[in-house]
Image (cartoon, rainbow, N blue to C red; front, side):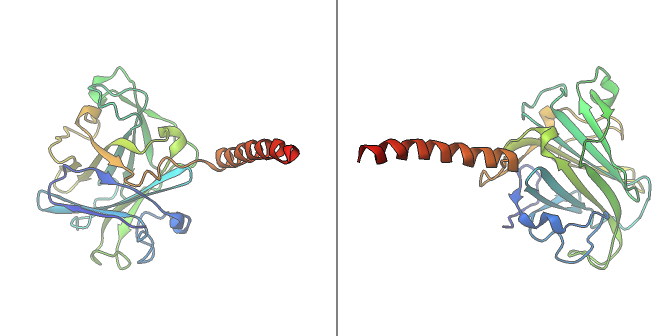
Length: 247
């Protein structure tokens, strides 16, 4: 299922949907084929005459995010950057704590960086760099002829975020920042957030929301699902046996 959420002012929640087609994603930092990210939720964010395309989905143990900076035609490799953040408990705290996570990807770089709140360093917004979790991917490249929105080369960023790190919820705090190196400008969701530099992340109290409208997130992992089915089956069998003996 694909959900479209288009708005000029970035003050609405980002929507996310479940998609079983996420195993078709080729993580190379761009649209590899024209239908690659089609089975995901679409959000068009208009920021100061710039448009950013955000595609989001979840499947099994991961959240998938594509950030497509379709109006940035100056390719500043190693400088242009996208950062996405999740508040695991959506507490909207004024100081980031240990259930707040951010992930960054720089144009032309195949190795993303992970950050966690709870640091005493106010200069970084109380975030500190951590080891990338298992299964995490953040990669960026130049998107071109296979992009659904423009064939003009521009930066795009692909993320694969493990749910075991964030915790499972149908409503996270969410923040997006896209940095255009040529203009030294940040474009953010929510729009009213002002980011001072590449190092300081705004507090979760200023972030927006990303939510699953159909409550398909959180998903049950396969081991939990198998255990649940077996548990229910045992209960049904125990109920049926006394009834059978009574007859």
